[in-house]
Image (tube, rainbow, N blue to C red; front, side, top):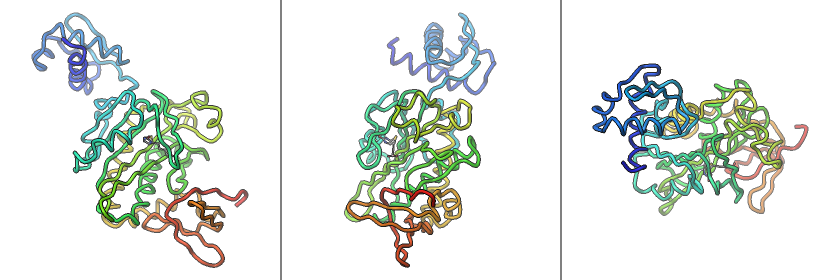
Length: 331
Ligand code: BTN
């Protein structure tokens, strides 16, 4: 049997035994169910062990003892409770950027079921031409393809909506410490834990599809961050003190994303504004916002249902839909 077939068989065995930990499975029974030879089942079970799964294996029996620290599609799928988002999940070991892979397949799946994940990225992209540090086995790098029927000026809300879904996910692990830094960042205990890169592909004035990319720092310890990031970035593990099951977290994020996106499609952020405001780290702060060559200083007073930040400056209220925010110290 070819290595690629063995890997596929290993995945199929996992689907059967993963839900029944400690149950003893006869290799001959699995062979019959999967229409394979017993010897191949045995070999594929050995492959599962190399992936880190706790498998007790004899010549005639297999028992599933514990899961592996992996972001494979099978593993995420095990926890996934969505109806559409992520029902077509493709997971890679290494890619340049999950957003790039997503844009290559976007036109082929208009049903909004495709999610791309990777264990690591070699050229992870951030906003404003920056890079996104994407080390192996500790984070999650996710791209979701959606096709919202919205015009361009309404699109900024998608990043805010995604940040809300991430904040709600992180709340489970680090309660009371999660904030959204409008429009694209989620921080925990004052440091950045996730960044969002929303890329719009258009047809005329309409959005054709949108790739929502998010990088989440999950199990990084301080030494997993380069020195330049150590003081400004954090991970859920650094704050909670606990190592986190990444596949379970990704599945939970997709569930929150699906719920928020459904509400967004009805009336943009109207249904979630209360929570967005509650999580926002900028409201009532004085800040400087740079967008291209424009620069405004003022007080952030609200976020509206399109996702725009309302800044009060010189007695006037201005709605801004994006940019680089710096909070004035002491406000
Ligand atoms: C930022 O904070 O600047 C945004 C970072 C976005 C990173 C994610 S990781 C998954 C997806 N693929 C990428 O190349 N970038 C986004």
